[in-house]
Image (cartoon, rainbow, N blue to C red; front, side, top):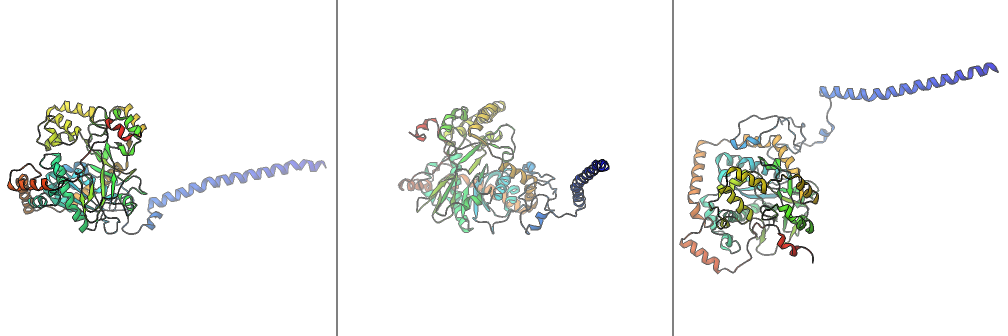
Length: 520
């Protein structure tokens, strides 16, 4: 009995020791197993023996993510002087990039085209164009003049699939002088005036021609968008203008994009599309009490809530009897279009985003820097004030004025307006444009453009000079003429029954309009 009692604790200790040993071995195995698998994966990956499973299901010709396409190797070449900032990074990082052409027009639906009138250089046009290619635009009708019409720029633009370049030649101006809208009254109040008024008439005449080209090309939608504006397709199931318009009901003829205005935070911005993320939201996307309640803090002493226009841009379904209604809207000769205004999507207007924008406006207009004379040149009050400052002030005075009226340097005000929703941060355009640049899209476009022969270069110079020589006489939109043809045109305008005028760039509502917008 005593012997039995002696061996009972011994058996218990042996069982406990065996259990502890098993647990220790199990824990060791659990630790070594993942470490072994990780080491094996590292060795296989280092030797190139692992295939990324996601690549097995990528169909040929589809979009690939960075690192999946061996063709994304750096390209070295010399670029034009205005393309210094279009350089590429040695590490591609743009998920949409397959090749620089983005030539998907055969299968994308709906087919969307842009028309614009521009004198900008490649450093502005290429980011603008390829951003919109990424979000679904297939075709561009570019009416070029100035720098955009120069041989070194135009040869690059003409080499891009889906781009039609139209030069402002004598033939174009003579053709537009006979156009339908030139002989109608709804645009006549903008005739025979310089600067912005002249541009507004040009844009409308070019839009009229673009409608015909869009219809011939089988386009479904047409938009007039300047090269300092980007469409922000918020609210779509994907970040895509194509998807946004695909979801528009079939009975809708026009879609209005309220505009947001860039709110720069520095005075040394060089590439607005890549450097600006803060925007002031449109009145149409704000509660009325917020808009009017924060109006004074939002304007900071400027003439209006926005520096420039506030009535947005619109997209029109390409159909019979379509016509422009100024640069911001479309109309139809045979019916009142059914239009909707988008609640989230917007057109981002990068206005006065660079300090040099002050002097560029001054250099484009020959008006006198007086309060009375600038009314002939500019439709909006801020443009008039900016022109006078740029024409009369020193460089230091201009910079101080730019800081006071354009740059958002007060952190407390910014935080307050961001919390109220007046200001907002929008990053996708910045990310897309920067990704395009780093992936080498812009440099690839320039490198792939055909060289300009000496004969073609001289012909283009002669054509450009000829266009400039006859410009002021061939189309009455340039200035008031005294010829018999001009007088007969005026008589014809006066004899036609008056119609509602074209929609000009309009400022957002001011405090004096408070009672018109708030419920009684």
